[in-house]
Length: 191
Picture (cartoon, one colour):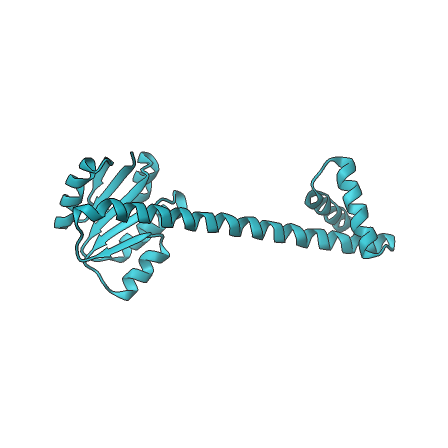
């Protein structure tokens, strides 16, 4: 059973969503009417999903959703009457996974939430993969720099310098990137 935090900014469909959630198997943690402390409410309550019901978007809501995405990312579903491209783009930029304009039907609520959760999980997976790739690239750059230092200091070929770094890493039971960091730090000390 998923837990939901509802931000209802005074729209009629927000009340309908609130009434439907328990009958569809969701736990409603709380219903908020202001986005001013949304990030702290999300941190405190730790819901699985955030549902926002609003007639239109103002900057305060975008700012609140941005803070939520930065502090505790979670699937966000928006029901709104605002069909402007600018609002849709800004909403997606701040982490909204589903943006539903002009109404909904009770039988669509669960598939909309499920789709938002799947989209959120896919995006989080891509973000983790990107972070891992960036980390590996940064380590590779360190290794290349350390290899250059070893080549210059010891007059070795590229393969010999790489072999020396690998041997040092194995002997010290350290990852190659950590040995590269240490070689770079020592070389900077000696300059």
